[in-house]
Length: 305
Length: 276
Image 1 (cartoon, each protein chain N blue to C red):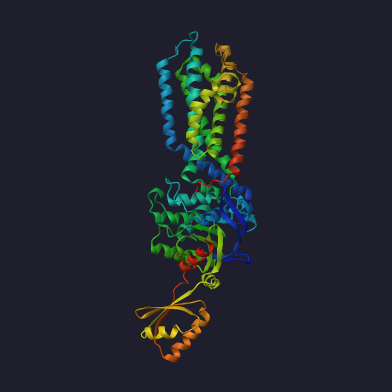
Image 2: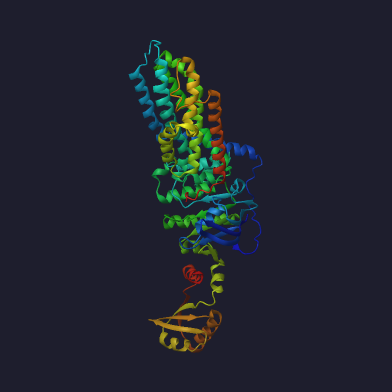
């Protein structure tokens, strides 16, 4: 099922939350990230039907996100830490299942399935008020999953969860994606999203500044230098030879490593390979430094500023 | 996967709400029961017991010639207790304790979000909240009213049947009005408290027509009219000209209906940006 933003603009009085956003989010995991105030939360609120667009339309399948019909197909894990504190985790998830219209028996069954998915079966009878932050995050996830919706919106789902828990939730989301669910995960921690998916929506100043896989996005930024680190035992000699390659902008010597910047990575790697072979350099390591999400996002933010 | 071009539809099939109405009804009744239970087992129940017990103690202290039908005791009971204390203070306090919390509590705790993302139309969410609150407040007000009347002896028993309708209508109007406050204002309990303890009092005692926007005015008008046969007299007509019991009753029902419609409308259309 598709989650569609069609030329969506949202104003908060005179302030613009998101500005003419269009995208179609299909099955699989899509990471949504941006800095605080970039418009992530507005997008999440629009998609979950908490807000109505000032212009344009947000649809979940065929239904407008604001409508109750859309919410049959939607599971939302919000970025808040509020619950019915007096309930146990199991009761809370059960009530949420009942609020989706399930019978008592079905709701109980779906609750157990959802708790099992988030590894909370054993701890489900604790009062939410006494649960750790990580457990509360899991309960939030469980209530989003309980109706088995085809579209999942997860706002900062990894916040406050320990590394083991993050791995478990990552696996869970991958499993869900494999079942054909459309999952939109927002985060301001880039590594989180990067570790979950290749498919990224980057948002800055209320606009989607890039979408696609990280490498695709990186390739779009051909006006930004591409940084490569090469570790070799003849670093000084190799630096002297590399600086003669026309595609190389600069070479920096750091011990046995070289930091090379180029605008044309494709032809640079070809020439570099030729040089290594002809001069018999022993290369211990060669890695690109700025294809990571942080670097890409940094470039994009500079561009949108 | 995010893309600029259409992506094939997912293989996943949305849960079918074939028996949509039944599912919706189940969801709605769940919300009704959830709201009722959360309100009933809240601190508010404990808090409203204080004024209720206070009133009972006042009645025991005041006596109102409890075991005789002394002349003027009905009027004294009506003016001092029913009009000044019970309908001006106890009824609005009981109504606001629950009516503002039913939506306002969820809003302040931000748990309203979990309801708004469920497949239940917003107006039905509000209706469930309203219908969970009404029996609770009516039950509390009418039960305490019955107890007070028993405490007041024979005049109380007579007063119970005379004033049952105005008390019922006033409770309904306050509950509806405070739901309107709850969906409109973020700190609705404070707004409702200021309204019921100050605005209602001020407006209800203003000369001229201004008092006609106060719930209290219509409640009092009904009581003066219905209690007239038992010796209750309305105050100086220079500043208080009551409307008939029938007119006042219609006005109270109109206020209730208007407030409910407006509340449903606002709640259906409003974006609650303070939830996340």
